Image (cartoon, rainbow over all chains, first blue to last red):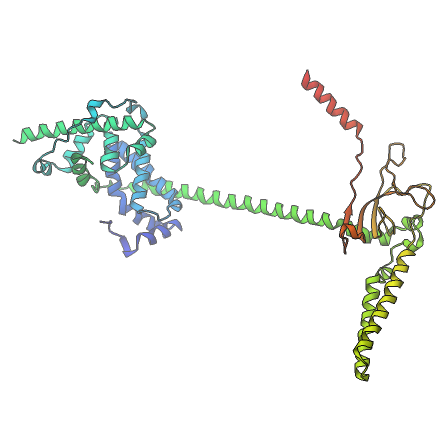
Length: 188
Length: 255
């Protein structure tokens, strides 16, 4: 569902007015996406202050590059990409170690999580589960599972090997699964 | 996509959080400054493009002016170069009225006369074949007259001291073909002597100055027509000082 458009102007109207320097339209655009984009930044950042820095820098880049948006895809997708790129830029690459995936990792079991248990988990619970992951795992899991990036795209964005991206994702999943199973046990 | 990925995406993709107050106030001035800088760059780039465009246009116009310069030179010299008039036979000095009396002009005048005659004859009921005969007779007379005139065109007068300048002359025989206008060029040595001489020999066996550009040549084998220019290759002038400089540089490079 698209966010509420203030003053009943379309998203395109707001973009065009913002390009002409209309401060009100710029603010309206900001308000349309700010809540979602801060949530995106929080998933990548290690703490709230870092998330806010990423968020600010990301929006500055959005408004300075607004003329480059060509309406090829959704505006929200474009803004989200800028936010993610800004977040990744500020995260040190040392979080990633180039490692190849072993055969045992490919034979990863898709242990189904009980949907009932999962539904009981709040968004904050899930966020804290992700936040507990090591930085490399967290970023790859966010990009692949939530944003929908491919391993090739992740490898390009993070300047790592595709195999490293796969490996980090498998390990992140395994860790999350274990944590959720623990929560299941506690619940029972 | 794995089951666990789906579960996380469903709950987190559209997740929103409350934005702290005053966030926009922090972003707006910086964003405005950035976009202002972008606009400034845009105008600056536009200005540069405009300047480059103007310079390009100026170059093109200058180049095209240089191309037509020989013609301009021709007419200026026609009026001002009295010195040449002395060197070349008086009959060869360019005269605008004389130029108008080219064989083509005479033919056109004759055609007009014939047309007028035809009109007159038509009114008098004269036969068409007679009209054609009259036309051909007139044409032949005109052609003969013009060829006779061409034959009578004088050649360059010889001169003991050749003129050293860019000049314009009307001559008849350059590289064996008639031409209306010719720009001549000669080059001078340090001691003042002419280093470029024509290989065209006139009646007396003397050399005249060489001819570089010919306008309105009538050379048929060169598809000559109106305003055809034949550019003769210019002679290389040795530049000893320049060559010395190159030699020195090369020696330095070797060392």
